[in-house]
Length: 237
Image (tube, rainbow, N blue to C red; front, top):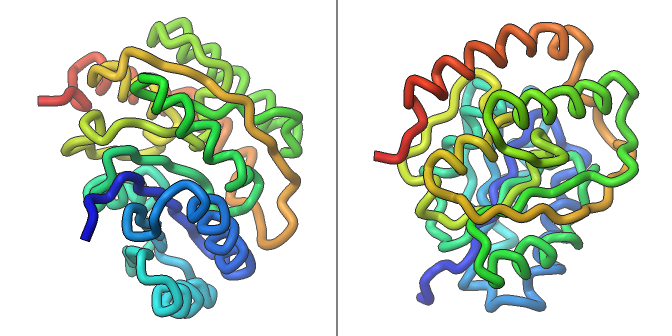
């Protein structure tokens, strides 16, 4: 079996109405670029309470290159991503949300940049269709990342990111660290960073997991992260 060239990590929680379309669209794009034995789709079920597990099992039976990970209880997106990182075997690893607000069809944009020699590629969501409080909070946290962490990117929390595998080795995320994945990876040596503009759609199915209360609590949480970051908790050893 050929070595894996690409791992796609999709964490999800209660996305039963989106999973089948998500998988079909991801493979529809990638089978034009890779032999299917060269890629893996890592689906991380973060304790879903709907029928997501049943749907994921059916998709795993249908597609031979889906790698399912099931958490029996919800542990959060950051920890779910860590599970995916530990399981990934591809030389390139891409993370993306499962709600279909970003487009699987934009995956080649990330791969093109990685193939040009970049270590890390982050997606900038254009014309975001999220509520205003989410859009503004995202801009604010991108500002915090720029000022306090010296990483100048336009969409720090897009969660649509590609990176070379060596930079995620033994990486353990906690709390809501997925919001700061770019500065974490830069500190681990992913110094050549690019951004690509990606499309963004209004959520069509399912319910958003983001609430205003999360935004309010995120400011003190950022400084807790900042302390861990400066202490070296995420360093590549």
